[in-house]
Image 1: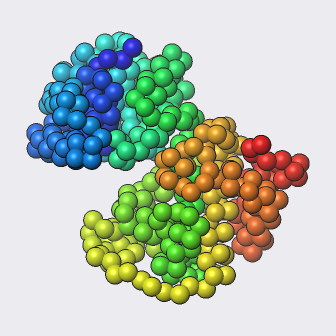
Image 2: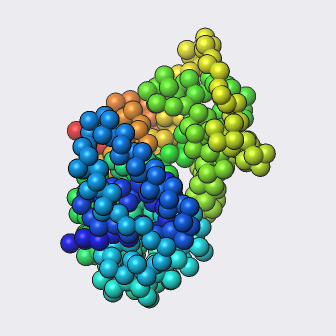
Image 3: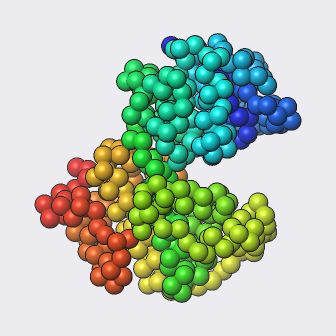
Length: 384
């Protein structure tokens, strides 16, 4: 049983993970070398919990219980009692490894060490430890207290009991857990690449502008269009993930980054946080009449590419079909599970649409997943 949890990094993600663990009744040690960051974390938690009281979701007793479960500290030595330590710092492999190596002498041999990385190799991070079998990936989504999904990623070194214990533990924290193979991007950041990449490709070909492409995806049921979402995430962050996945998959053209996004990042047009990205902020509302056929073409093209990526994720044994659909609906709020969506459209129709793109471009980017093609030939579906 995990009773005491350490969290390294008191930024938005680390503070959120600490809140989730404390709410689940765990004693939490939130570490950060930066005292100002720790104070900001405390202040933000006070505001968040006070807001929950106002909304009637918790009472003052619960607020005090959660706060009393969190101890803020500036020394890794104070994590010595922890059964589990989760790192949530900058997405830099070298820095993460340095922190893990500093941490390991202070914790017991039974302590599980985890990273909240969204795309780095879990096996590579585990390799820096004297006991790599204790290491695992636990990827929360931002904001951690609100987002239900957590990706659990064992490394090839991870002990089976560690894997099983973490799956059970994170479920106890009232999260929806998906079990993922240690592959670049895991489920969500791998499968979601076409949502951004194909939208950028459509723009670069002059087929439609940012606003029209966004409108097409909102019309298909997505909460935000790809350009609105990239501005929200930050062009620098989104581009870095795309570039990381592209390199990690040996430059597979499916994940090829966009010069449009690269140039915006280089110019410092990062989105909402800089006041300018694909749009200028504060953003004026647009009331444009769009051509319905064009919206359908854009929406269908991006969805076909998403379905293809989801099917290939199952084909490559990265995750189950159930976990892929759960990850995309609960991790990034897609309107439907992509594989269920494929069933509704009809797999033969999906394959035909992807093949049409391939015949136009003759690029490996548009190759159809073998699983989709085989299932379509057999007149099968992903779900009954």
